[in-house]
Length: 394
Ligand SMILES: [Zn+2]
Image (cartoon, rainbow, N blue to C red; front, side):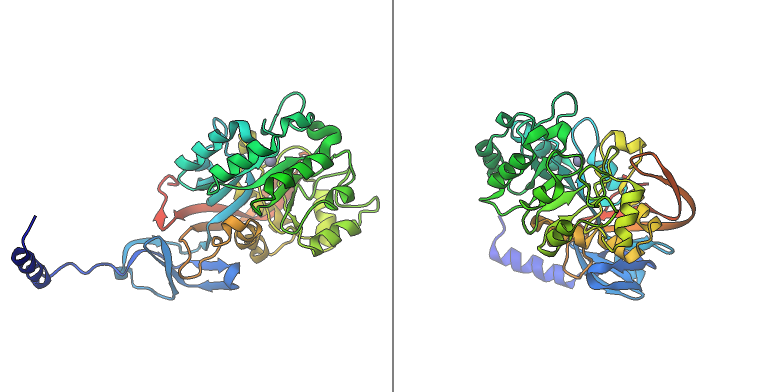
């Protein structure tokens, strides 16, 4: 304890000492091309960060104003990437692998249901980036061998799933239902209805996994609501988004019109073919969000990382700005719990990706292992999470 007189004395002394000037900013990212579709911004400016937030976007911020300077000359500076469908589950895909690819927010797409959800909560609590979770409608979570998680509806426990969401409201941001015939059998529609019973008290979205279902896609879409998400939108037939003549089904267009969202979910098996994606894009049916559906096996096959998946859409003819939007602001807007992310607006959380847009010949593959060559490819070169540069990416 110090008495009042001593306190006054020491304060006076402190005020009199020449203190080193406190830096105006904790970090300044200098010299990059800032591409932030949330602000329709594509300009050479520096990005200043203070206290974990974006403090300023301004040309030529003096290096002396910063504790740390990150050189981004020749690079793109974008909001931290957001992958709304991947599987950062234990023992398979460490969230650090996502972060190393510029993904500051990753959403697990239903790896676990009510029974095993603690696994994903633990992952989220330990991850250096933001891990959020869609709880599987089935208490079993994703079952990868033998009968799928929805083949027996006794595996859906609505009360247990709701209790899990209530308990982990900060981490669980939606519900996932995989509806393909090998996973749900005849239960695709009922599985989706049960998913909505879980979300009903919380107003969180349902993400479905479409493609090769027993019910038709229009029958499934009829149950989907505004804000729900259809993943694997470019899945091949049966029950893809195209009719027999390659035209987008009218029910698909109608679903988009009433606010159902369509997501890529690249994955490795039955989720995307060049043919479907190209036909859909030719008809203007672009994705609302691009996601990787990356899991452990995807690290070395087809998916590799999120920037690789984004680059596939550059190859398919989308603009850089369109592609970055679908991995940042659109992704943030697609899930209510992420709504403040995906932007470099001053005041926003400072999640930032520094990317290289390399030119050359790059090979990309679809789920049929068909190869196509593109001429641009994105690579993550640095990443900032909540204002701090992550040093795991050398
Ligand atoms: Zn998935």
